[in-house]
Length: 109
Image 1 (tube, rainbow, N blue to C red):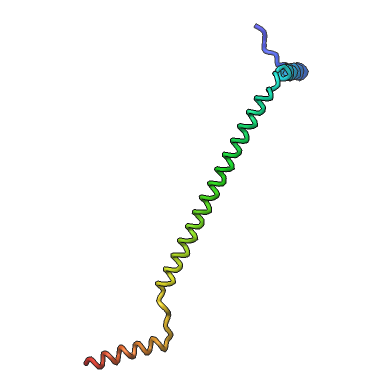
Image 2 (image 1 turned 135 degrees about the vertical axis):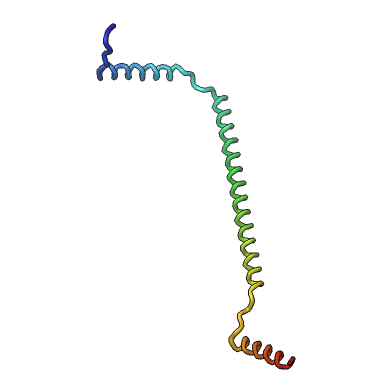
């Protein structure tokens, strides 16, 4: 049995060159697609692009609707918080209420 001999650079280059030439010959031998096939492929591509555009438009509309819904919810929450806020009274108003409670308590006794 003979020992393995690694191919040198020239042998590897020659093998690569022959493989490339063989692949090129196969590509040249392949028949060109007919006009009908080309037209069918273009029609399928246009149909696919149209479907993708419709899908993108639908997603954008859903995203916009969700954004609008979030904005409406935030606005509603802000209005509810604003309505629930108790107005802040001044020191003079608080003192007047306290004095009124005190006077009412004195009047009950």
